[in-house]
Length: 138
Image (cartoon, rainbow, N blue to C red; front, side):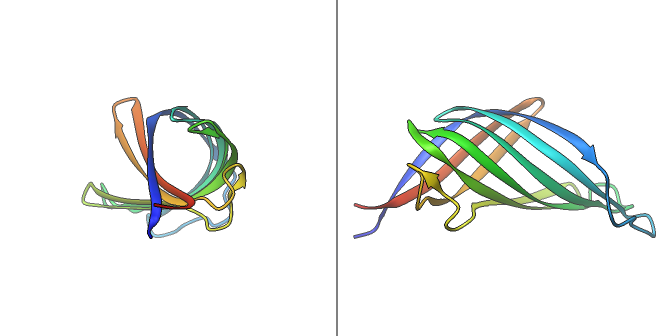
């Protein structure tokens, strides 16, 4: 038997605000921190809060970031929460983005959740696909 995978889709709005940074960056590299506030709609009806650390290089189109956000709400009607960890790299304008649920971070009816998320952002519209499992076998 394999673990039963599900998909949740929808949109989200994001609000990023600068936070005071610790490391100054040098040689044209800009280091920064941002707060993350999101509101998810669709199969995931939730809010999240988190922090992002980023680096922008002096080369246009090259940057990197990592972030962690605590998601709380309902996923396909199941109440609870989980933590998403982000890893993003941009080189020559090409992006690679990995978002995964932190193991054992699920709470409430989402205890035991695992999975990953993809994000598609065009203009001001942000869409997500969350592929997840709750430990159920098919």
